[in-house]
Image 1 (cartoon, rainbow, N blue to C red):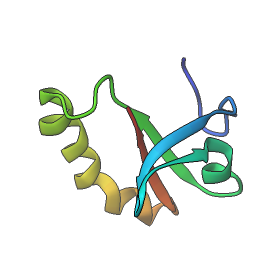
Image 2: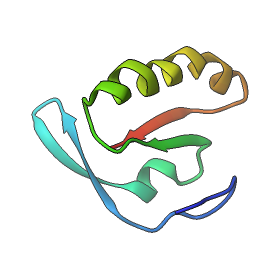
Image 3: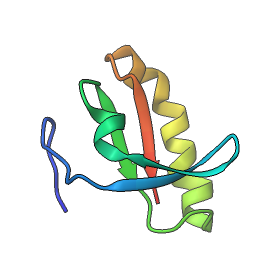
Length: 76
């Protein structure tokens, strides 16, 4: 799926690890009215994702924040 700045993403629920274990959260609730970068990886904790993809977003996080990005979401 190709998206552009300002595109709408389909409504879906995501699971994430909360303080008390897995929690379900609406993607739209995370994005609504906020400037957010969303990127996706083909597999969590795989070699390329752990050694190349995630570190590259960590290195560039400050540049995103300087442009007003409030949050960076990784979906896998």
